[in-house]
Image (cartoon, rainbow, N blue to C red; front, side):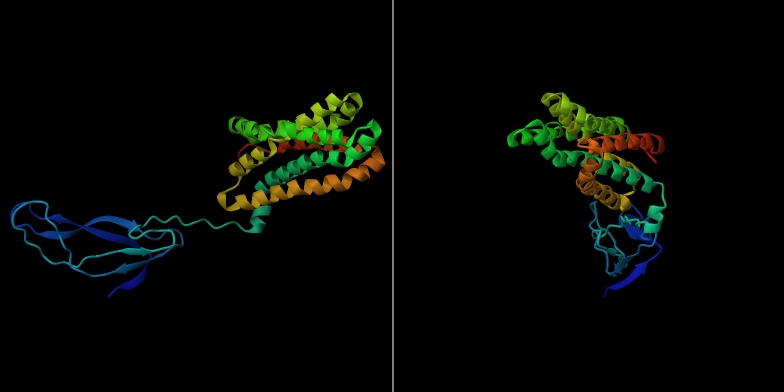
Length: 287
């Protein structure tokens, strides 16, 4: 019959060693190692089954055996196999109060603001393209070219951005990325009045700079947040990313009515420069 109990002390296992090397030979139980089944607040169920030990000798000649009870240990666990005592108890996630009062909340808040600016600068052209087309006499097909020029730079920049992040870290690359895409946003009105090629180049530069945002966000979260908080941090940062869509589409018409056609480009561009100053002065690459 098997009996089950919860082990909260070290488990002693035994191995058989010969008492003598001459004939006849006898064996006894010898303690071999200790395994601690208690890790933090974790426990395992261990089953014992007393049976006699069957021994196959490794040398020739008559061997005399003494029947002794065997100790079989079976660990019942969701994350352990039979006979294994490797216990990796998952740490508990901190409380929400501890999370919002830690230094890490400042990092994820700045990341969320950066992603909000990223999307806001991207969607401003979606609102401004109609009055710009009417003012410059663009056809519908060319308006589509202007809209798609952002993606010309965005196609490969996440790959290049990820490589740069691996070398220089998320803080440095994110700072340069926000500075460049804010500059491109700020210069869009000048480019639209200068030439079509200048406008397309400015929008392509916006796409190149914004491609580093997500690799930088992942790098900073991996450095700053423990495993139990990373999903929460990614959720907050990506919420800022989607908030940028709402802010850009909602505020752009209001800013256009108050400050002219290029009002939102100037406001969002200056907001990006302000963000860079706070980012470089208040955030470090690692905790």
